[in-house]
Image (cartoon, rainbow, N blue to C red; front, side, top):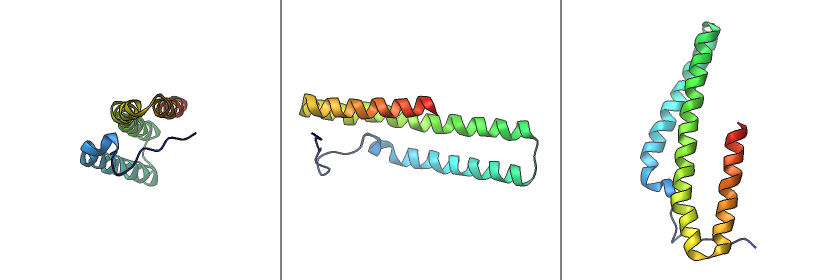
Length: 103
């Protein structure tokens, strides 16, 4: 059975840092465009790979920040409601972690 948390009463954990996340994602978007330009300009492979690595680390930073916010807010809020709600949120977090580790 799925336990729904009323969206009128619950805010996502990242909401207090929304502007910071948006700013980071805009920088990441710029990095991705920069990599595409490097490829278009036929830049040296290793230089492109270095930028891909930096982009990957930036995305991982966003992902781990969102996961941290999820655990501190969404999971904690669910735990205050019921064991069932907490279990569901923990399972969601576990699956998200599995996806992050695989990528």
